Amino acid sequence: MDNQLMGTAEVAKLLGVSRQRVNQLSHRDDFPEPVARLAAGPVWQNADIERWARDVGRID
Image (cartoon, rainbow, N blue to C red; front, side):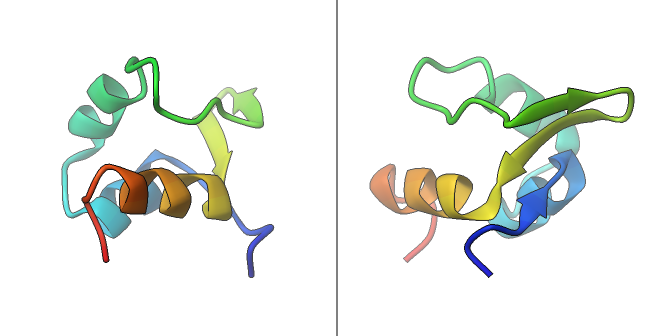
């Protein structure tokens, strides 16, 4: 499951924030780079987002 991909909606659900907030967070220097940018928006690896969220204290 570590190679699962996540879009903005999935990241928002994981973090408990809005999609707009994910867009804001994605501009932070420490936020993971997306593995792709599609017409529907950026796509991240699940493991990268979960690691970042643990590192910054957003999830346990």
